[in-house]
Length: 283
Image 1: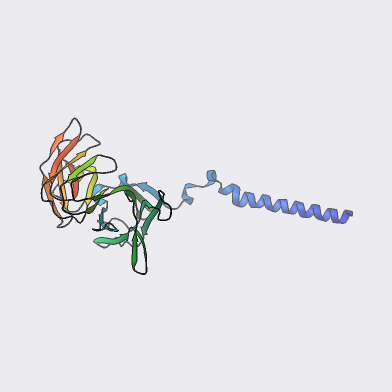
Image 2 (image 1 turned 90 degrees about the horizontal axis):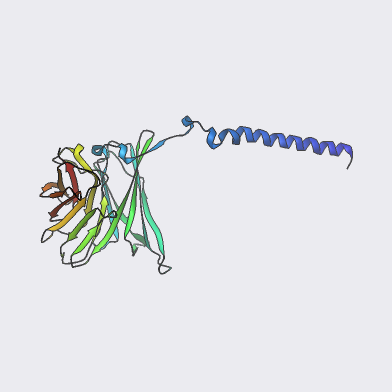
């Protein structure tokens, strides 16, 4: 190779290296994780415990009589500009026996100015009007994204999915702190037990005294033929706790006759229907 061509290649190589160095300093080095300034990060995610109980949305998950769908309902949303959600669960893989697959649904159509949002979510697939319900569902998770200005508040709650056959059944939430023994219902029903995130409106108590979490039992089952015992184990010391129920069918509150065992931090009572149960500290 003659000297002229060698010089040309050397100059081209030096120029190419110079371009690489410039690109590194302009676009890579200055944008490394340690170099991003806080003001360059858009938005902020905070946890649910930073929201007052009175301002949290009240969420219910009611399974249909055949367990193939869940009716999601959200109330008390006006404190937020936007709400989105993801409902996920594990179900049997229809193609591989003994294997689970993740299913779910998302929602971005919530209008926070409405008094209530309702959406029926199919637990399965549908084609040309024919449903193929999932099987093997025992629990799931509901993630709610609540936006106020540039700030996002996030809530993640688990839900348990159970089928009650004609005989009585003992129901528990995922933590085991809520327990209820349903009476014989005469036919099979599906029940979901979950944290309701917020509290139903118009409770006859000081909402500042609400002890979290708030447990909801959701079903289309009718009023019980006889009372069902329930118990809630509290995760904190509570002074003179009282137990209230909110009936989803007629939207009525009732104060339950309850007993509190301070040694085990457990409050117990009886109920005549599936409902939302709220423990309130009456100092």
